[in-house]
Length: 493
Image (cartoon, rainbow, N blue to C red; front, side, top):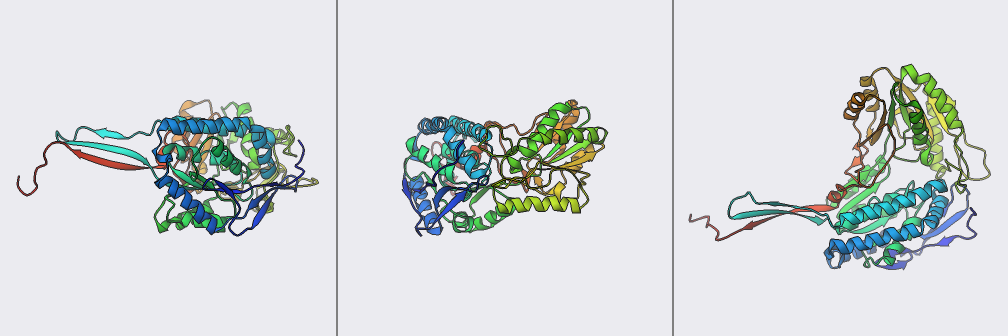
């Protein structure tokens, strides 16, 4: 596919209007693979956030969206899904240019995006409460679910359209309104989504999108007293700042944060299947993935031979131009992330791990590409065994017993996901029960479905996205008590 011949100009969406930043400032995104400008965007700040929140507040308090029937909201969400499907190639092209991910992967993600909107549409008609008819002859009780209000959404650069689609359609299904801040590195597809929402008939002000950087846009959004909830996906460090900023009005906070996800491989597993999943798990999206299987725990009796196969398979993974359909591993998003990954590779060697493959920047005419990298001799206390690298770096650890594997797996501040490979179903469930993670895959890895909730234990986050439970995040519970017949006077019985 060809590179763009010009830089595309975008505007922000506030109250149904496409506008520039109040300051008039703008910024550009640069392709991490090709070093060419991709998009030109308004550089928003607190003034733009304030305008967007006012619009979302008005749309929630006075507008039609929260008052529509579930069927009416579902119809609009389904229209959005249809428009996404009609634009898969264009969306994938833009996202590949801005993120550096392979075009074939981006196309698959766009199909997944449409599926998320379609699934969320089904939930519009399933916002359930409870009734209580056991409180006595003169009392009835009801519990209603009501939309929480204005939701601020802050999304990262690694899966721009997919991650906003894990949040926004579910909030809309509940009847909420939203203010969105996409990453300044990859805002293009989120702003395209704003146009799709308008084309689908979403009322003005229900969704507002402010482009810009974290401190000028994300921080005032998290602190704003008219924002009822923040939904954030990103690093654990920034997530803690979001929690601190939310304290002004004690807004609800939902966080999907980092991970250091183990794949535990037992000797009795289908090792060919596990091998494919290990290589996919660590190099998918260049390792820039909260679910990345960046450490594997292998039973000692098969560790050496399994490691040899990993290395041979990793050598064959196509790395290069993400616009090439054959590419499986693309470019690292920016210089800061590149330097962070290389620092971890250097530190792994200093701590005594043995570099078996890769570890270097690839020699390319443009962009930042890192060779698929494998370490062996990794011990649980090393940084590369415990900390999130967010790059194509695999740490291989070994274990003797199920109990030791569980202990090593839990030896990190994260608890997002894990994988276990074994033919012994009893052993598989011993691991599943022992590992403290929000998702555990048995004989598979990184599969995902809109029906199943996603989120983490410990410092991997708060709350859950996806599935029918996702509506709980975007609602408040209201108890209603009803008295039947004459009321007894409390003073004269």
